[in-house]
Image (cartoon, rainbow, N blue to C red; front, side):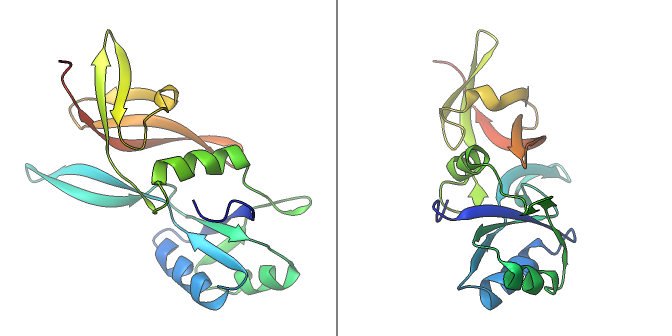
Length: 172
C-alpha cells in the first residue's frame, strides 16, 4: 500500500472525521507518519436511479504507517477528531502484516477499492477481474440485486464483514 517496511497502526476517530484527521496528520506529522483512510466505491440506488458513492471501508478508523514514539503519541492525542490510538499492554498495537497485505491488494495502491467482475458457476463465485481477483475465499455472500458481495476482512485480529461492489457477468 505504501511503505511496507514501517509498522501499521490504527486510530479510532469520530465517525465522519476520518478524512479531516487524515489531512491533519499528513500535514502536521508528515515526517513521522502517513495516514490513510481505505474506502470503497459502491453502486447505490436512490429514487430509482443507480449512483456511484464512495464509502469508508472501516468507518471510524484511520490507518497509520510509520514509527510511533511517546512524542508522536502525544501529538496524535491532540489531533481534533482522534478518540484514541488502538493499544495493548505494550503500547500502540501493530496491525498484523497479513491484514495490511489484503487491504493493500484490495486498494491497489490507492485508497479506494473499485468494483470487481464476478461470475457464478455451479453455485460458486468466481472472480474474473478487479481487486478481489485471487481472493475468492474471502467472499461469504453475494447480493445479485444490489451488485454486492460480503467479504470478511480482519483488522486488529477481529473479523469485520464489509460489502464491496461487484459486476455480475453471465457465463459464456
